[in-house]
Image (cartoon, rainbow, N blue to C red; front, side, top):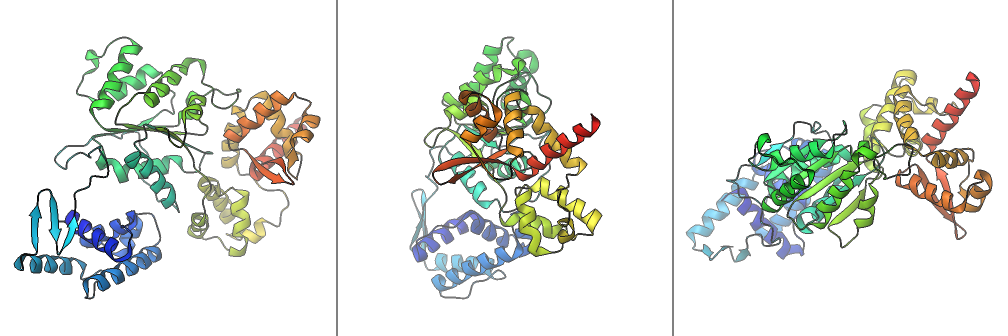
Length: 463
């Protein structure tokens, strides 16, 4: 009885008992317990706390114990299942019928949930992951992983844009997702666009990684390369991650516009989205290209996924950095927008200057922006168009949220310019909206507001 048969049997047993199938984490617990893993090892492998794994496992053992009328736990799970198989075989209750297995009157069918069959175990997975980041611990991202996995494996999405601020964890999420679902594909590729390669270079890399071709066999024209890649994506099921797509997009323009030398990517993403194939592209970016926003939709093979702030995982980051004054943590998390990277930078600062005492850090009225964080925020500022800089500077001068009418008065720009700027700043995740008395109000992220104020004060001193 191999682990896949065990999982199928237990899933049917659980469903019969409580009307629910095994969750992804329950499957992982059973699979790794079968291999002799301990709870803390399972927690590390699946990026969650040991306590959470223990609680979920305890519920699972209780249900199994009730269903099988004998005690089942981590230490005896494998022996119970192997003994149960032996009993079934000797009693002639175990047999095969067509393509189905019958185990103790429980019908366990092969997976027919998708018409896109995953590669068989005998198939060798082609991988090009030389530019992929290290797999790091993910904090509190189980819902995000489940959503993306559903979009890719069940709903057959052809292109997914994961967007969000720098440091929010887009690359870490995509890396973990790739490792989790890669066995459902024949080819997996991670391509970092941080150096902003021309489309021709990207196509060459993708073609060579998805087919048995040499560089001297490639056609010369861009159109022919696109045709070959699309054919490869139809023949093989490929999972391709394109990281740092924002480097293709222009600075000093509204969000989502390409640099002139990379405009051919617009046609590329459109073709990938609209051509029928069995592969999936994931792109990570600070902002979405405009054509993807237009193509994306709930019932579309193109989806836009905004990666938002951490929930409980934000506190875990502060705990791992041994910060004190836990009652002040929520305030710190809100200031840094639950952003994993920004929180780690601030935690290091508090540890180095204040010995980890968050309360002492907050004694100073002006929020401190470290050099490392300042460099990151400067990159965001430099991407803004002139009208965006004008609007967000005006917003930063106000402590309370500001209305459209007030912004029109203060900035002296036309409604069309203001609406475009607000829409673009929202797509860059630098401003938030609030509804108050049936009126939409706008405010800047606290940390970015402080960056703008500090930069303006520094410039005044220089003059």
